[in-house]
Length: 402
Image (tube, rainbow, N blue to C red; front, side):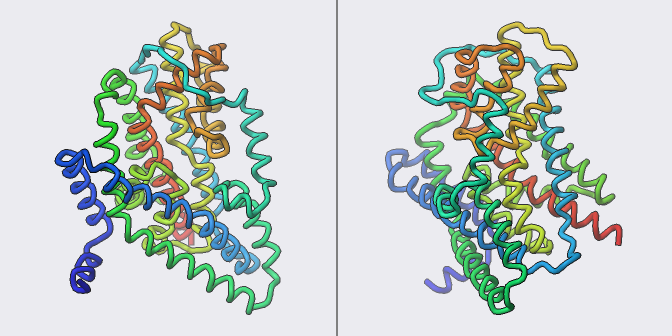
């Protein structure tokens, strides 16, 4: 048994995940009636990642800030600029794609009992309240805005702590990171369960009616991942961006696609940053921050579904309004993590720009939930992999200047 486990661990994590995907597909086709037995592996894996991620972020950010010495560079300014530019360009690409390939929807029922925010002001208000949440509550509820805020404050306060205290923080940080590594090693089994559950219970038949909409959504996200992001990386580093971009898509995007949670993928991104040799003081802050505000995929979803509604209703859109939509999508996407329901519930905010009533917008939200099995997976894969791409690009750009 030990030899078998040792051989299994010698296989790269990505290859092990691919094996898990294939086995999950085969089991879903051969034994769809065993849903509860196999799909529980996926539920347990995601639960484990979500359980450890808030603690990991809290501890790593405190430790990273507390141990920084004066004048130490972390490239955070460049990373924040890349996050902002990347999210805006994502919204702009989605707007252009929606005009090139206009999509009309068959509006049916509203989206249950969900309640969207009334405007951008409410989104910002929610984020502000999340910042001032009790730290224990923030960790329990996985409120990453609150976790980051408290971790930054405590990290600054502990900068003048004794070396023994900082050593203790380092030991705790290493211990939590080790737990994360144990969880990540279970990814092949967890993703096998997730794939099995998705195919055995949902299938793809329900997506046929919305195929064109999905093509615009997924096509826009692929264009951003394979053209826009590499272009930004090239501008910053003056090097071939594709080795970095493809590595991030393979090792971060795949797991994010199946877990459908940027927060749950934070440990995976941390490990990838370590593998790429990036500075821990930087990525221990930029990765959890990116999982909160770097939301290119969300900007695409908001723009595409909003303009699909506009085309369905026959509303004319001028250039200025289209630009405003791209900006609004980027701003709203950055606040998506502070809204229950994420990017889909921010669609009514963007629809309000065109005077579309809430009851119509909520029907589009309902469609978003129907196609969510594909839309949310692709959105999360783009969001999460971009966090590592931009973190690495900023560090490579800094090295180029030296």
